[in-house]
Length: 252
Image (cartoon, rainbow, N blue to C red; front, side, top):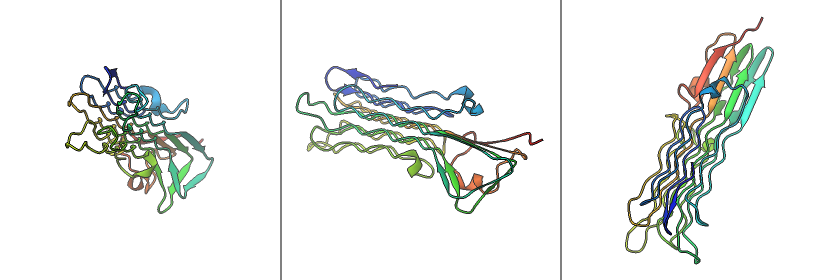
């Protein structure tokens, strides 16, 4: 999942983490390939055992590389009787770090880190109700941007999954050189709607850097006696199928 490092200056972006969908690939930087996004985990929808999300990959090696975003956490709520959600449950992945604008030891500017996938949330009760304004989010983190030019400012970090309701943006590239040339790119958006993380920008300019891929959406599983989504949850959650699922439990 980590981006490649080729020669002195060419770095690929880190891939985004995957869980209930696919993470976005990291962008290529000249001859350096971006890291592959994490694949959807086939067994993750059972949420047994319950586990959190996967981190993204780091940008290509070097002191200036963007670090990976962490995967979202895991939460299980099991209630005998009626459960009412009031407030928010947030299990978003972390945004990948943007590459920095180099250091005096090697002049190498950095590629972006991949965003972490969203985590896993399991809610089960005989009956589940959703209060007004309550919601559950497990979006993936956006990929980090790649630096644009030595000494012109770091690229921005990707948006954390919990901080955006639908599709956490990737971090923009760092500033261009005075000549107008830019050696970076914008990170891929995190998974939400749609659920897969987006691919980070590639840059074919000589000695350029790729941006980080976005992390995938996590898993939200709701189980009650009806096997249907509780009223309100489908409207307040940013997830579309299959990142949000409902199933029936045996309450006898």
